[in-house]
Image 1 (cartoon, one colour):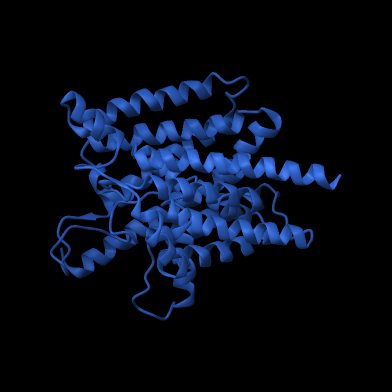
Image 2 (image 1 turned 90 degrees about the vertical axis):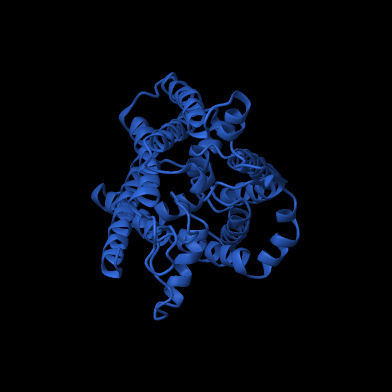
Amino acid sequence: MDISTLNALTTQVLWAAFIASVLFGAIAQRTHFCTMGAISDIVNMSDWTRMRMWGMAVGVAMIGFYLLAVAGFIDPAKTLYASNRFIWLSALVGGLLFGFGMVLASGCGSKTLVRIGGGNLKSVVVFVVMGVAAFATLKGITAVLRVATVDRVAIDFTSNAALPNWLGSAIGMSNVSAGLILALVLGLGLIIWALLGRDFVRFDNLLAGFGLGALIAAMWWISGHLGYVAEHPDTLQEAFLATNSGRAEALSFVSPVAFTIDWFMFFSDKAKVLTIGIVAVFGVVVGSAIYAIASRSFRWEGFCDAEDTANHLAGAVLMGVGGVTAMGCTVGQGLSGLSTLSATSFVAVAAIVAGAVVALKYQVWRLERSV
């Protein structure tokens, strides 16, 4: 493959990722898909509808990922979440920080982008602060702290720390086949659980569950198959085009926000190129804005007072630090990571939920004290 062909393929990958993320943003805006909102609905109103949306999306993404793997389109061992190290403490601490922060900031990374598309200026501030905090945790002062503390604590396995590998080793089955079995059992279980919810079977709920889950699977195909090159002409090694990690990626919205800010700040530096993560950030905002304008729901919104500002600033910092430490957000670890059945993703998601519940209880306590 010559350079011109490689550049053309990279452009195709970027456009495909952008289109998929535009659809993600439009669907999330229409259906009010939000993990923080789902947890809040349960804690405050005992309403599981949005959590069932989220569960269905995870189930569809799981099944889609392992169908692609069985068909030979992607290799689960070459994804961002595939590692022999089970970084349980990083996932736990980072998840707790992220979960607490997303409540203070009125939504996770993806919801921040969706809200920007809907005219929310508070989310623009959250975007910038979260991105800076995330970049500092990737390469700056909090990165030094992360590497020196929680990242040191891990369990090393001889193979990928994922449920399919453990099941495959136990019963003498290939990891991909074991993954498909688990994906069908867990994924169908989540889909059926969602469908059995009272009054759940409505167009928007099904659109969020099936649509967003399918888009995660589509992103795996885009990065893991369309963008896969067996022998890069410069390095003569395999490569996944337009990815920040050099591995197959799906959607995530913490580190990519940092990379987006970096791309903006050093645009004239030829070494700073567009990646799937960066175009996905743009795509979600664009998709959300298109639907918000078309549905006449676009509204400018700013901070109410100093306390509102402080909460969003603190939440943005916690999301940036926590999201990088946990290797993902509610979409990164929640939808993309769980679709691979990574053990680290399960810990991260559980910690994010726990952190959000604590933050919601904290807000209720603050409110009761002020009365």
